[in-house]
Length: 300
Image (cartoon, rainbow, N blue to C red):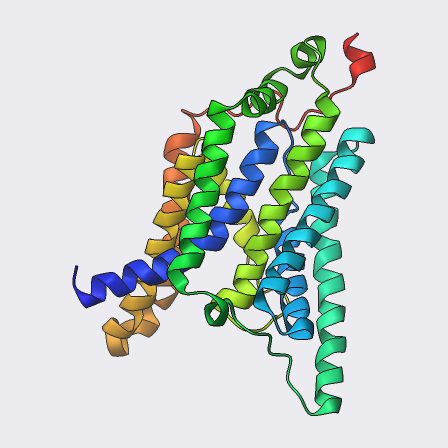
């Protein structure tokens, strides 16, 4: 593989990591029957928590742990509100997005002002300083492999899929539907929070308002493109990352003509992802109870 092709692959893999983590986390929740469009806000909260904790502690690993914990906490709150409280999942997810955008925006402004007054900068240590790139990438891949094994080759995975397909039948078999969905939402959002930490500590070494840039919504689409399977999600995330890396390489190659094609180049990864989505969506079947609250009393 020549240098240019390797550079495209490496940059594409970097771009794919946060999408892979976020989409795999959402996959776990959706296989239990929950749809959480609040992963954009969860990723943003994870990015801020990771940057703030790493800056305060001086450790990127502490930042990643904090981001994971914040993501898990948001997932737990989402589950309590939608599973125990049977509130609308879409509205709750929108609320998470709006709340995360507002709170992180205010918080980063306060920290930036504090740093300016102290003559310092809000610059947390980066993941690359704590671990090589390939270690982080391999860890993300291994996490996806573990999810695949757990989902299809363990009793817990069978239970999760049963709850997502037919919660009434699962309940009749003695499975605690609410507990399974709560655990799925918590674990899934923990991965989304870690994806946010990768943005602020891996791809950059800072936090900016709205820095997720729609990656959470894209991760939702990648779950569909990946047919609700970890392997499919991995392939979809890597495809988008490579397409995004390719358009970044093409920009300087076009020279003076780039201004004519710049919008098209930026849109290329998203457009092609939508094309794939449109071609595959009709052939896929989501979990049967996706988005539907389960009321044990109503089913009785």
